[in-house]
View 1: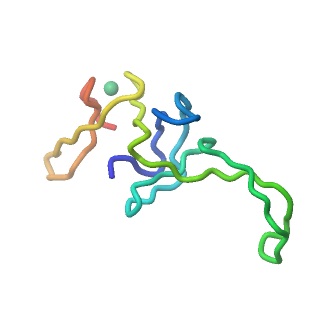
View 2: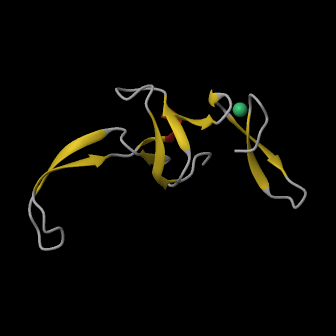
Amino acid sequence: MRVKKGDRVRVLTGKDRGKEGEVMRAFPAQGRVIVDGVHRVKKNQRQTRATMQGGIIDKDMPIPVDNVAVVCPTCGATRIGFRFDDAGRKIRVCKKCGSDL
Ligand SMILES: [Zn+2]
């Protein structure tokens, strides 16, 4: 997956289109990510011994990784390419400016 935890991404589609946030969790198997403050829903939560807190809570739901673009510090939302460094490690680069991400 091209997006990982800690990335800054912009949402491309859906009701949160245009929002930017940090990837809080990534689910490579499902191709989904949770982005801070995106696709936030209110959930009624029953009070349990585990949570010690009932009522309505805000929860960010996973969205398809195809719906977000990684934000390059220089160009903004961009597409990701790859290059290999001298040690053969795969490094993500911005397709617009070529800088490492
Ligand atoms: Zn760039």
